[in-house]
Length: 291
Image (cartoon, rainbow, N blue to C red; front, side, top):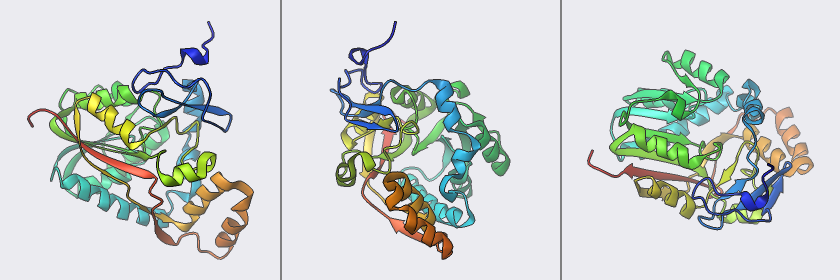
C-alpha cells in the first residue's frame, strides 16, 4: 500500500504533517508538523539512499578537514568544552555522530573518558585509527551501551540527519546517568536568517538534513524524554573562508561561484573567520533524577 501525505506523522511528536510542503528542495518535500512545529522531509528517504550520501567523499566536502579547517575546529571544540565543563568537569563522554573524531580528541585532552558512535563506516574507521580506541560504526541503538553508562552525551550537528529524532533522544537518555549532561546543536529554522533566506538557507540541505527544528520544538523533544533544559545559545563558529564560500555556492549557485573561484586563485581559502548568523542553536540539558 502506498503512503499518502494524509498518513504522514511527525517523528518527533506524532502529530500530522502539513498536507502541502513548506519547501521543496533538491527534489525533497519538507512539511511542517501541526503539533511541535518541526519541519521534516517526507517521505523519509530509504536506508540505501541515505547510506549513499555519507560516503568518504561527504566528509571531505568544502575542504572541511584541511589543516586550516582543523585549526578552526580546535577553536570551536574549546568553546564546546567550556559549555560542558560548566556542568561537568570530567567523567565518561559519548559523542554521537562523532565523524572523524575531532571533538573526541579534544575531550580526551580535557580529561574526559571518551566513546564514539558514527554511522558512516569510513568516518568511524578514521576516528578509531586517530584516537586509538574502538568507535562503533553504526547508529546509537546498535551500539547497545549499558544503561546509565555516561556522564555526558553530545550530538553536534547530528539530530537533523537521523530518521527518528525521538528514538535517538530516548536512547541517549537511556545511556546517560541521572543528572547526566546532554548537549545538542542543530539549525534553528525559526531564526531571522533562516526566515529571510527561505529555500536558500544554507542548512536547508535534504537529504542530508531531514529535520529542521525551532528552539521550542527541540526543547519540547528533550523535555518529553526526561531532560531539563539548562541553556539555549545561538553561537557562531570558526570556519575557513573556503568552507564559507563552499556553503555559499551550495545555497546561491552561480551567484557565488565567481567569488569562490577568485578566493581560491588568490590562495585565501585557508583564512579563518568567525561567523554568526544566529541560525545554529546549542541546547544544554540535564537528565532528570539524582546523579
